[in-house]
Length: 186
Image (cartoon, rainbow, N blue to C red; front, side):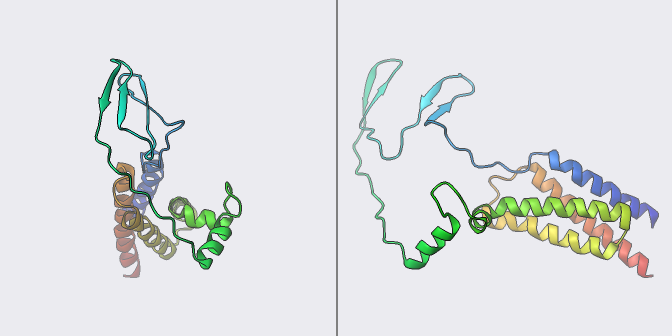
């Protein structure tokens, strides 16, 4: 029984160390429409989608490349409904600021990750100072469900191995806590 409790504490310390592993790729934005090629160190300009690319000139060779002119499809801007306008105004009162509601709705993924990190730190506190196994079990299940909801909504593209290691460690902690709780009852 003491070995399982120690194992649970080791899992929790490993879980906190996993905070420093690559977890997820955040969205990156191009600054000033430039992309730097890391291998060559050259910068190339990114053309906006509405730019004309029928005559593209290569700067290094001064050769003009003729391409087919394809008709560009313009999105029709539909009138926003009254409810959409109100919701947008509640989420973003001015152009560059978010309300708390808008921030939570827009960045809910980061909020979930922050809540999971807080839960894991709270589990660490409970394991080392309170040893309340039922609460630890409930918090582990909540953290696991919150983490597993991320790939369902965001997809697996941006997730890195740190995410998978954390999910597996929490799963192992849940199994360990179930064994500890069963042995405690008997």
